[in-house]
Image (cartoon, rainbow, N blue to C red; front, side, top):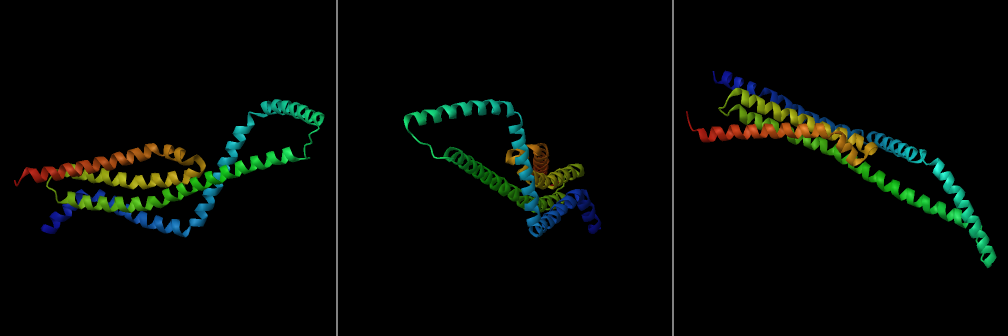
Length: 228
């Protein structure tokens, strides 16, 4: 009889136990996956980053050809005037100095900018992917623990089932939002990737928070209600 009662109580919060266990298993397999396929993931993130940089370069330079031509014409007239002025004053300008120096300055600035941008976004992407497995396992253990607690709290069955379901659903989807953000970071940047998964992240946090509040309320009601 006691076994049947225990089975009924556990069945009430069964959805929380199932989702919590799913989170733990997913966290373990995700940790193994990102370890085994680290180089492949890094390559894919790098390709996405290069494609994003190329697209931004095309968009930024596409609308400026006319203005660039006008500036180039004005630049030639200024350079010719400057050279004539230097010749008239007896000053000499080494051949190729201006073009070579300008190219080096532009190239150095571009390389420094691209290197720092790539490394920052790449690091952020790998950190998000790694944190997904930590959050999945942590939230999974939390969901299982609270579901087991709710199974033995003498409050209404629907309240316990709802609390376990809310907590388990939020715990399952939050790590997924971290993975999606991590895979999009090199293409969209940190802010863009976070913004792209904001609805999913906010909903997951809301569900986890609601489940925790309901679980705490159930425990408080049981503690202060007294024996009946």
